[in-house]
Length: 344
Image (cartoon, rainbow, N blue to C red):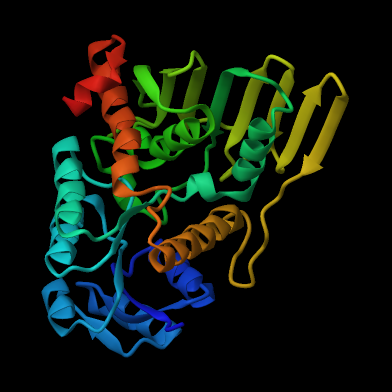
């Protein structure tokens, strides 16, 4: 079976992880890269041996010669690039958040659907092996019928040094980090019907919010809490771990620091180490996220080969992005917001 050829647009901070993931992927390889910054383009091209280099996405698509494109740029450019890919009939992966607004996100999904090309959002947190281990326990029925859950990411890690733009946007933690936690909540507990959110800015040197607490009502009666903070100083820094608490009719599940998964039921208590693999190119503490990048990209390759819709397709990701929009609206209006408002 022929190897799928890919192009990467955006050679910034996170894209290096994606390039490593593509180098590891079975059945795919990157043959061209694009970035407006010649220095970044040269650095990534030299490191990964990519000779086809472009400073213009239009020139990249005009030359063609690839089967899919991975868009790893900042959010403001996503719609134009996805629509350009759709115009050229190229299956597309887009970095999260999918778009600046729900209107843009819907337009992007519609553009790809109109020409019948797949669109997947690089929503990799649900691909973290500890999260998937927790999902497997829930699906097994070991803790019974779930009625309550919590998805928590609290840290004081300096994310601004590597990504200084995070300190300048009016929206920060919900859009950048909370979107991952909200997607995990959907993955574990199902789609949400309403959102109640509160936000706060603790760090005076940033523009957006760095603390958020979101209450979700899920279809089927589950209630969950998603809480995120980059202002929480813990005795042991948890970055970049997502912690879980899940209560069911027969027991409980807890995913705690150092990737310890504890399942308590009538049969007793079992604690497992569900630490992610340390890939040869990865480095702690980022290895959890780095492994998930590799896993979601392999998922994309497998879906392209089989014609299956990706788990985090653009269509599916609209439901996660709606929770982001609902959270900001709820926090601004200090009221509960129905999610259906964003699909009318």
